[in-house]
Image (cartoon, rainbow, N blue to C red; front, side, top):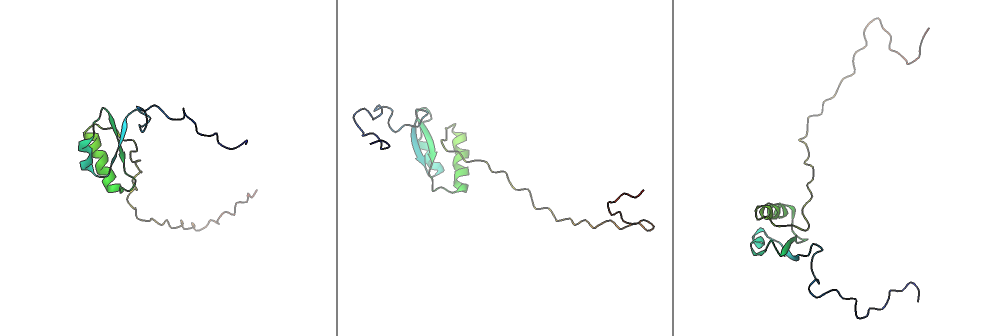
Length: 109
């Protein structure tokens, strides 16, 4: 029927050597601790940080991976750091000079 996906047949598989590889051609290794990076081979494997790893540990993993010159498949995005809160400065309206009337926005001729 039209609209239905085609039936899976022989020939839909990828090559055996390419199955499970990252698009870069490297085998993915899931890392959850910075110590896990010691078992990664930079030439044949790529690091993927586990989804349950928090931000503090992600930063530690990224620093260690850069030191070991490893490629990370899902690096952390650098968030712009918030500027320190500045004190709120309230400007008071300027006092009206004596002898002058405040302008109403109308032109007088």
